[in-house]
Image 1 (cartoon, helix red, strand yellow):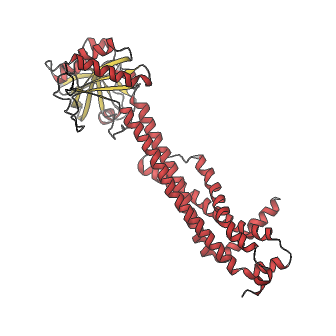
Image 2 (cartoon, one colour):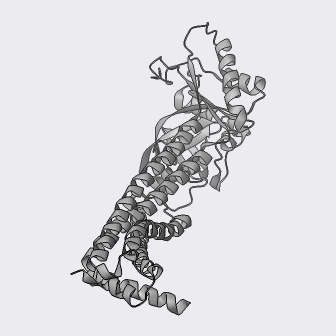
Image 3 (cartoon, helix red, strand yellow):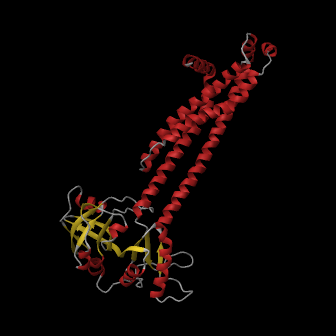
Length: 409
């Protein structure tokens, strides 16, 4: 059987080789279609994987309460300068909301950090010790500060990886003293790398310090309001009811009357990322459909080539039928040629798709893995396209009348 199959494939290749240019052009469309499918699936998987990683990095059932409301057109009134969100609000949420398990006040701003003759403008965030659990953010070097540091208003700071690289390079910064807006802070840790956010911002270009220290030394003693309150719900399904309860509580605490706009805004960043994942899936399906059109066009090209081949080899078919070849044998011969043409295009398309995916991955800076199912599906689709579009020409060849075929000039 293997010998017969090899002879069958060799004969199909020999027949296709009689008109190399025509066969190559027919296989080209299949190659482009298969390459497009492989690339689209690989890019779609890589994009979804990045969005899922961002969702995991976002936090533990994350609920984000911002100072400043939203106008009816969706534009925020702004957090800085909005003084209605306070530490007492954060304490009330932690105390009265059973659906919330962790809460941290948050103040933030921008500052210049200096070490030796190097300086860097970065973002700082003042938080409490629960922030590290809420955001799933550990220290790669040193350790996070403790609640005791928050209560005692200690001048300790954790550096993001970008800040560490700008000021210290590969040196160990633990224990070093840095200057932040003319205030001295001791480095107690370096945060693990987070990478870009869902909005493309560098999450590692940051400083973390106790919120009490940030308010008194970076903001000023008389500015006691918060920019945000960051919370963690007890479970994913508890996030939405927790948001409803927090909204009701804060409206009551801020004495907001029915019909009046909130002076705060409760956000769910995970919904944005989930929407991105769904959008990437939809876009991938659309692109696969477009790539499928290329396969359809390639299949029509194969049918056209095989019909021309049947017309050119009518006398050869008549001779084969006259000397005893069965209709099934003739049909299998031409069907085999169509399948071989499609498979050759498919294999070249797999190689082109893999190379294109790797190049795109390097260009975008993504970790691009070729999905195994795409590499398995590509030759299977090639065979199916060859069978589907080669059947009619093969059937036409098998049904030729031997006498009429021998008379063909």
